[in-house]
Image 1 (tube, one colour):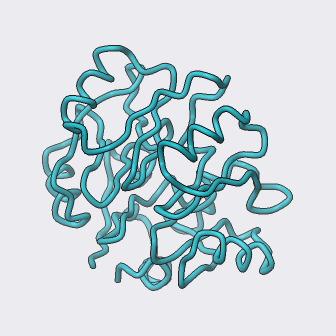
Image 2: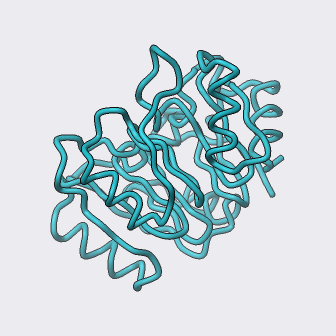
Image 3: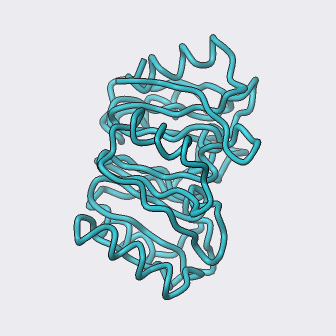
Length: 228
C-alpha cells in the first residue's frame, strides 16, 4: 500500500479530476502522462481510461465508482460513453443516471464496496440505481447538520473513512459501522481544506493526495485509509 502527493493542471485538487477503483481509473483526456503513470503506480490499477464527461475534465466531481460498477451523469455525450464502455470491456456494470436533476454525482454519493451514503434529496429512483449497479446497501444522510454534500465531504475505501471535521463522534461511529470499515475519523487535506474528496484519489491499494497537504495530514490520511 502506497501514498503519494501530486498536483494536476497546477492545482492540488486531484480528487476533482480522477476517480478509481481497484482495477481501473478514469482521468481527463488531457492529463499529463507523468500523472497517468503515477495513478498506475500508486493505485496499482490495470488501466487508466482517459476521457471527458459532458466535455468536462472534472471526472471526480461527476462520477461515482466502486469495484462493482460505475455511475455516470446524464450530461455524458454518446461518444464519451462509447469510449468508456469500450475501454472497460464489460468489466464493470455501467449506468447513466437519467432520473434526477443532479449531475455532480461524485459530490453527492460516498461509496465503497459495501455501502453508499447518498445526498438527502437524491430521488428514490437514483437510490435504486446505486443499489443495483454498485451492489451496495444505500441510505440517505449527511455528515453533519451543516454538511450535506456527502460525496465531497468524505473519502473512503474498504479500510477506512475520513470525514469533514464537523462530523460529530456519533456520526463517525454510525458510518464506520455502516460502511464496514475498521478505521474512521475526521481530517483535512491541502493545509486545512475540509472537503476531503477534492484532494484525494484512493482505492484499497493506495492514495494520491494533493501536494499541498502537510506532513501531519498525510500521516493521518495514510493511517485511517490503511495506505501508509
